[in-house]
Image 1 (cartoon, rainbow, N blue to C red):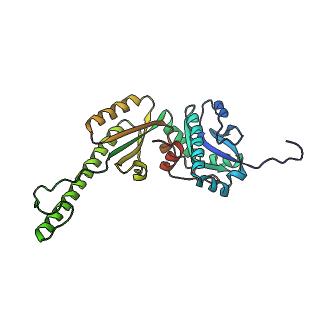
Image 2: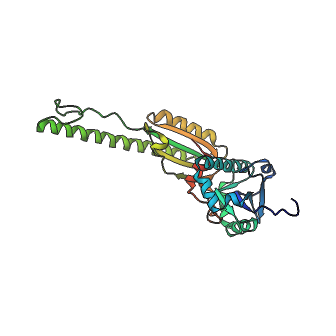
Length: 292
């Protein structure tokens, strides 16, 4: 920089908070690809994984525009997750929400200090553990059954002339509705059996909001979307349990994803400490990790 140049104003972007571990390898990551290296920032017993970002591109208005662009949002989320994944492979790591920003390093240290107890508690909870996701799907619904004892006359999908045919049509409607309700009840019970079996292996579990048809497609319904915190080394037990459940619950589609950094179990209460940031744990998991 020449004597006439002035430094470009920057903000401190925080990816995660760690404790211990050799984190020097993180400096090779591009992070958000701003030209600055990913680095660490020490605050007492805690270490934040951060990167300098230009204030002009990451101030509140600029950030709002950036994250309203679907492609840019996905790029930032993937970069954010890549850094968190790398950090969690080296040390116990509390992932921070996408777009956690501070005015400078001093403000970041201050925020970490204010939440030191909750962050240390979260790090104790997740040390030696990983998050796994289990999603359970059922077919969108059974084919409408024919009425068992209704009148045979009249069209299949609508009433014909006369009260007898009208009653037959209503009977068919009620039978279909009862069948759908019974199918839904049986499906939910089966999903609960899956949840119970995986919970028996986990040290913590969290039920997340099921995805709608815009994610699952119209031909299947998600009946369980859950995250489980397991001790490292229990992967084979988990996979064996799900293999057994797939054999028993043949009407269900059971999907396993992971291991992930423990997004759903590492809330250190820091989301409101930065210039901006937010999203629920479930939203952060979806945006940051882009799981299936």
